[in-house]
Image (tube, rainbow, N blue to C red):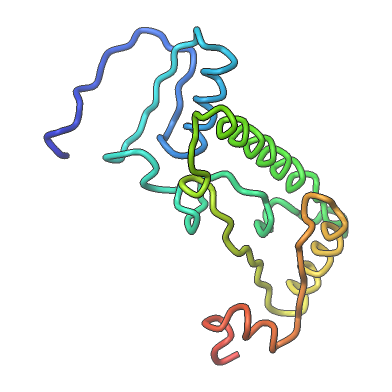
Length: 170
């Protein structure tokens, strides 16, 4: 533990406890500050600074995302792909994007590249059962306006082009 850490304060009551000092807690805290300025907020972070764990665009364990490739958001039920969770998560992310735009337009945020960067999203499947599921998932999402650029390919050349490290030896 570094010696420059602040001593923890004892607080009897707080209206909002934000767990983690990443982009999502920052967004929620800013949104609540604007909507309910009288509410007290406290951020709890175990690391030495904000946004050190999951806020990197390449580590989206807790960051805002669009549910583009997370297969657990599209479970199969009775032979059908249920896209409701993926759509719900994507809708919430779009609301976050609208709020960040509002913050930019009001001068609270200044450089969107400092906090939001698009990165490629890929779902990978192998074996006929997984590939069939992924194709049906694609078919269930491709015409939805929230997933406009979604693509599916089972072409070896496309796989080698998009994922050269994964394609080696396959």
